[in-house]
Amino acid sequence: VVGLGGSATTDGGCGAAAACGVRFFDDDGAPFVPVGATLSRISRIDASGLDPEVARIAAMCDVDNPLTGEHGAAAVFGPQKGATPELVRSLDDGLAHLAQVVRRDLGVEVEDLPGAGAAGGLGGGMVAFFGAELRRGVDAVLDAVGFAQKLASADAVISGEGSFDSQSLRGKVVLGVSRRTREPGVPLHVLAGRVDPGVRDVLREHGIASARAITPEGMDLEEAMERAGELLSAAARDLAKDLA
Image 1 (cartoon, one colour):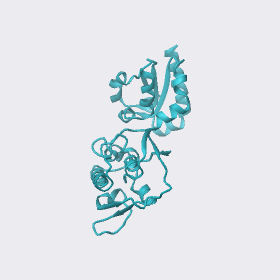
Image 2 (cartoon, rainbow, N blue to C red):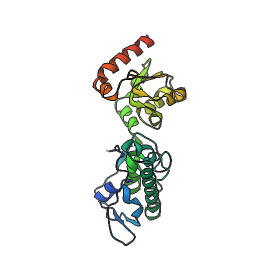
Image 3 (cartoon, rainbow, N blue to C red):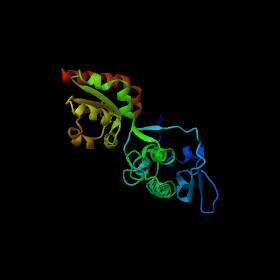
Image 4 (cartoon, rainbow, N blue to C red):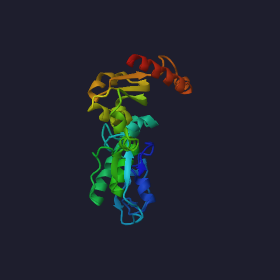
C-alpha cells in the first residue's frame, strides 16, 4: 500500500519510477531523472529495468483530480505550493507531455484518469509505471474501522476538514463519508477550521446537513492553530445543542 500525498513535486511520479529502475531519455538519448521543470524533455521511457521486487500496489489517494487541465495536478495544487500562473502552465504542459509519452511507450492512458492528479501527478505515475490500483484512502480507512456497522446504529455523523472548500468535494474525507451516509439517510455534519462560502450552496446535493467553521470571524490563522482544540470543543458543544 502506498499513500499518496504532497503535491509540491509535480513530477508525475517520475522520481519514484526512476528510483525503481525506470529510465528516461532526452532527445539526445541521454538518460536523466525528470523533475517538474524538465518533464517536457522526456523523449523516451524504458520500463524494462523496473525492479522485479515491486509487487502489486494499491495507491491510496484522497482526491479524484485528473492529471492535467483546469482540475489537474498543477492547476489545483500548484498555487497552494506557491506556483505562479506561468509556472502552473509550464507544469501542466510538462504533465501533458509525460502522459503522451507514457501512452506511446507504455500503452497506458493516465491523463484523464480520476486520481491521476493526486500528489503532484504521482497517482498517474503509480498507474503508468507500476500498474497500481488507485483506491480512495478514505474508503480503506472506513472499511478498516468498521464504519458500516457503526453507521447502522447512528443518529448522526460528524466529520471534519482543515479547510472545507470545493477541493473537499473532489474525493477527500468528507465526501467519502457522505457517500456512506447518504444512502441510509443519516445526517452528516461538518466541523472545519474554515468553510468556503462557495460550498454552502451545494451541501445538500452531497448529502451534508450542515457545515460550520470552528474559527471565529476575524481570528488570524496562528491563533486559530494554537487554540484548535479549544475551538473544536466549543463548536462540537454548539452542534450537540442544536442536535439535542
